[in-house]
Length: 52
Image 1: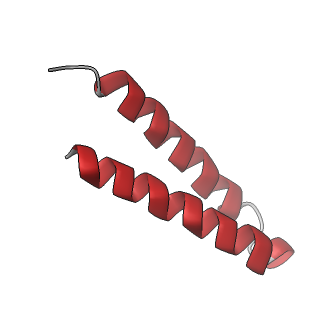
Image 2 (image 1 turned 180 degrees about the vertical axis):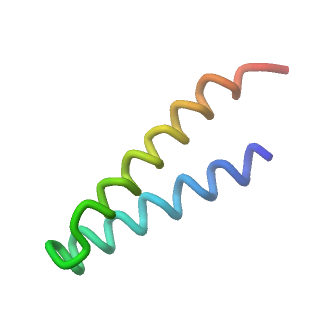
């Protein structure tokens, strides 16, 4: 499960980068939603990842 969360985070960040630099204004706020989801995923992973 840990690897799946990291995979989703990486996919969201890559999608954000491609959308932000590749499409810019055409995609609009959807790109920023991807970034926020990735940040939430990272924070979740850091908070839950310390449990045995």
